[in-house]
Length: 109
Image 1 (cartoon, one colour):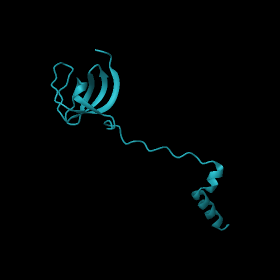
Image 2 (tube, one colour):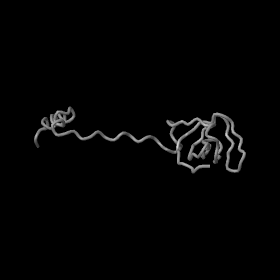
Image 3 (cartoon, helix red, strand yellow):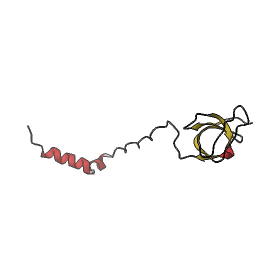
Image 4 (cartoon, helix red, strand yellow):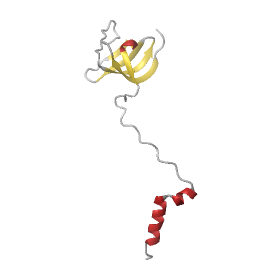
């Protein structure tokens, strides 16, 4: 067996798998698994939801779901704020212009 390589993604169990060894886990078709590592022909991971089983299972029994968020990952971060505008564009920006107009309308104390 080759070395285990880190791999973090979700997977869908396609076929029932009955464990034959101490480190293998039973899988039922339709269950979701969190894949943690991969080696030649095997994944190491855990069943998500329902029962909490952890172990190894055949790669060919799993359809990877790369777009599925990992459990506990939380919501995606918001996009970063827009870059600052150069001075010449800032003056023409509608929000900036409105702010300057409002300042001009204020009466002196």
